[in-house]
Length: 219
Image (tube, rainbow, N blue to C red; front, side, top):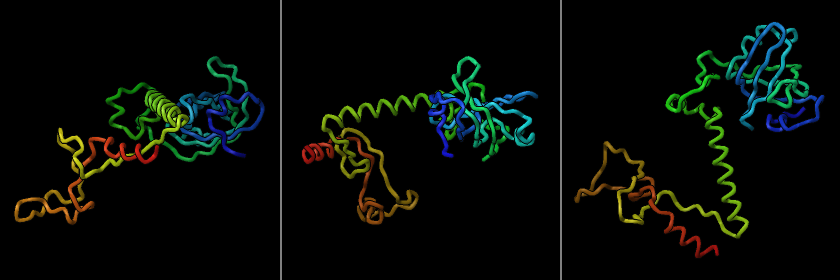
């Protein structure tokens, strides 16, 4: 069976069929009668609910399924009786790919932006940053599509340059030289012969210089 992304599962109305999903646990609620696992794989902000009969799954395995754990779930897609969701998955089998420590930084409770900056590698899994980057993606795609359909080219101008294109402000220098051991010539100028580009280079302050070359050579 082929894995189905959660965004597709949530849009599917062919109830009764078997599906396979993989993702990270957002929440896990346990009781004697039933366990509910909210699973997310990043394809959508929304989670799919996994309904688990505790009698059919090893008790020790269920204890390891905490927020942030990584799962592979096989089950039956069914119509959900709960409000706020059209479908859910009745679990048949769970494979635990990876456990997650109790100090996992992105718990269900809300986090401040300052807190998320301290755990930057995890913040894309939050709804806030997930929504922001999805909006940015769609806006960028809309802009590129608009110009592409009208015969424009997306031209990448150099980011590193030896030219001070504007001449109006200080540029950020780029070098591979050891700043604590800079060799200089007799006039006191830094020798760049052994630098990566063989000369002094900086981050460009203008894409226009190279952009004009692209415009006059690519129509």
